[in-house]
Image (tube, rainbow, N blue to C red; front, side, top):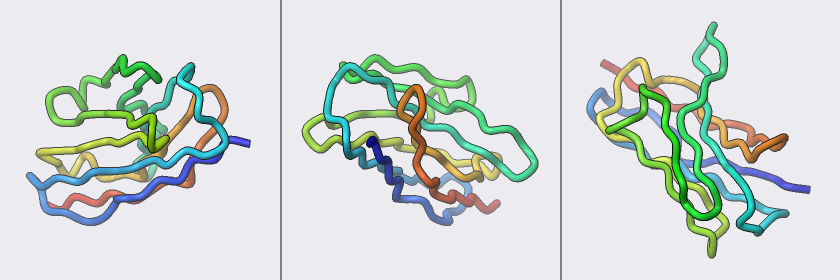
Length: 112
């Protein structure tokens, strides 16, 4: 059974940075795609970025130029480095290994 555990969320001021981590257990293969999603109160869950086991990445327009997704296959961990944070980035951030595995989420709050 694949399990994902997020960490690294917190509260920052606008313009600040955070680095989220997603530790994956139960699957160490490289034939996978992992993504970060986020959900703000009253809004639908939305894709932020994805990465394959060989490092191919894809970003939502809102994340381009500010966020970086990366993977460390030796540590079985996926990261999301977020810079120049805005209040609109406030949400619960979820790690997702396609097609069916989700973490419990980590809260990110950006104050103005």
